Length: 141
Image (cartoon, rainbow, N blue to C red; front, side, top):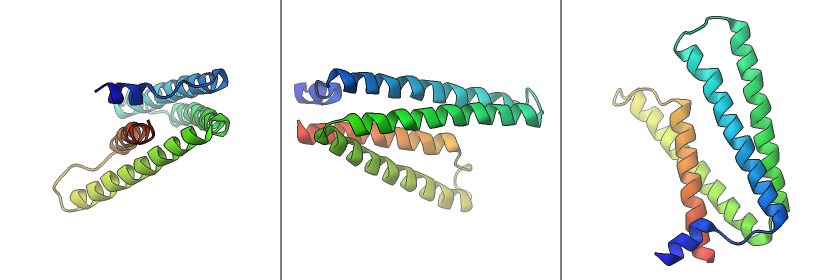
């Protein structure tokens, strides 16, 4: 149990790594909020303006690019072990996302489940990524 807790906490990062990690967190939260702010009102049909939808998409793209840039800076500045952990987690996230979305598409085509949405895909990516981080940190702890 103690080993799992240490793996979840991760290694003691340098101050620059901590700054980069905080930037990833800030941009990630902003991206999620912008995604929700752009998508939910349109889904609930609170407005029907194409311009509002395009503006929401542009704002979301801005935060998406900021998140990706912050994550790239984090990976670039990280030490070799942290890069290896992140790479393994990303590989598992890609596999998990592909598995959920492809099997969900097949099950939808067969009429067994409702159509998989982007939220399902992003959720699969997120949970797979978290599992990959824990798995890799346990392996290298």
